[in-house]
Image (cartoon, rainbow, N blue to C red):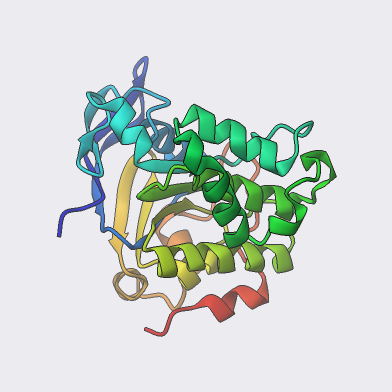
Length: 265
């Protein structure tokens, strides 16, 4: 089976410093792939390269079979992205935010209304679509961003810390919607998170990056076995160290209800 995402010898150099140093990995279609690492490890730089925001210094990226450097438009049409920082227009309604995004992605005019309504229904916002986004809670805004990223029917959805700053109940709700996308639509999910319990509960495959290099990959059981640990958090700390990084670290534990999302293994 051909990977939906293939990364080969990917690097990004700033002056003499390698933020990302020759990483390679693949993501299977229909899977949930967790890309983890401490602050400053190279996660954000990698995400920016995968989503064509930042040009690599070297390497190759294939998204849905398209070269992300040579066939940018086709690659971009194949993925949706929810960035860590909010990018909604608070002065527009939810529907207007969706419609604007549909225009940008060149969704056929006759299909826009149906696609918008379908995406809003998936994230449970159909009844609130005419409200201004400035009146939404943080969780509702995140759900709207996920809906917006679905408007052009992407093959893979990139989620950069989608639940950061949200309470445990809202995080649980967000992941329920993400699991629904993955299971019912067969959408591939590529996520970053600092909450290790989230990655444990939802990820099929995990990659851990540190100092610009991937230091471990595999299923949860494989990583724990090689690290001789009982949890992903223990393995993560054993592999990356317990020292503080340059940026303020965020808590890594998800809410207790996240455990309900855990797959049977």
